[in-house]
Amino acid sequence: MTENSIPFSRIKNIQFGISAICQFSLFFLIFLCMGCKKVQDDDRFITYQVNPEKQNIQMFWKNSTGEIFKSIDRLNQHVQSKNEKLRFAMNAGMFEPDNSPKGLFIEDYKILKSIDTLQGTGNFYLQPNGILYITQNKKAGIVETKKYRQHADIRYATQSGPMLIINGKINTLFQKRSKNLNIRNGVGILENGELIFAMSKKEISFYHLAEYFKRLGCKEALYLDGYVSRTYLPEKDWMQKDGNFGVIIGVTEP
Image 1 (tube, rainbow, N blue to C red):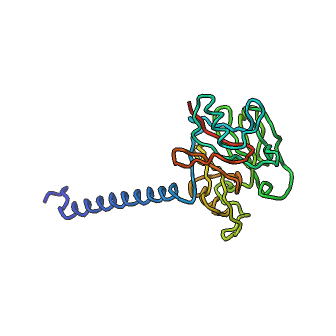
Image 2 (cartoon, one colour):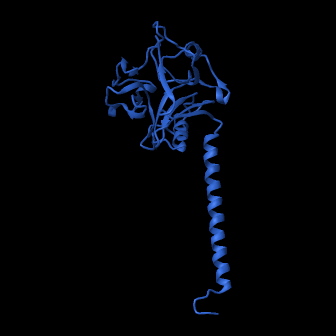
């Protein structure tokens, strides 16, 4: 054996060590993927992820003649009349008895309802409430109402409440064992700027809806509404076309 040679047994040990590291890394990656799949495939929810920079997200309230859409079916007919396809739709916030938006609503840069910073009762006024907005350059944001700043480049905005996730943490008002259960829907935003819309298929608490958005990786998430919630998502064979809403958010394509 020369001075610089390595014993065969040592080489085998090194190879075994490298093999073990590779196997562990592979196992770890599989484990992570399984975990991600488990979150995405949570059968308690119908979920849709959208890239606002690449997909056409709009908020709808009234048609060109001033009639309120109210239902997803009427919105779908409107979209089809423009030779477009409605890929996704969901009710997008609370509303008054006359189907007008509760709180701030901006459509095509026009403020159609002013921001509501009052105190009151009901889910809308649970603190903090918040605002979902989309800008002219197709950037989306979810922010607490008190931190919202109006800008001319905000094309769409809807106010609702309460916030579900605030800076990566579940709203401290929520209780894990709460018996306040309902069908609920909300929206969260990921670090890459993409939005995730989710609606529970069964009655669920605020806490467990917030927990779901947190598991998905959302740093901010906003509750949209409760028992009236509907989702239209043909690609997942989920097509609820009824409803009696105020604002509806939709994704359309040619």
